Length: 81
Image (cartoon, rainbow, N blue to C red; front, side, top):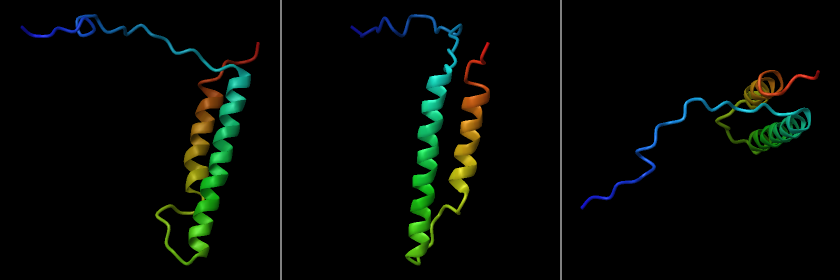
């Protein structure tokens, strides 16, 4: 006797739509990402000031996470009415 999962026999729901963030949620996410950029950039500076080579260049996190912030604010946040 084999085990059959009822989950595997259900059709995959492809009609799911993602809800967009409201302004407050977007602000919280952007603030958290901004703080993360600062922390990462400070860590890169500390590694370089200790005379070690970091695998990430200065400005890397600002550029990469900055793009994510742009997506959150422009594509994933509801527009004001």
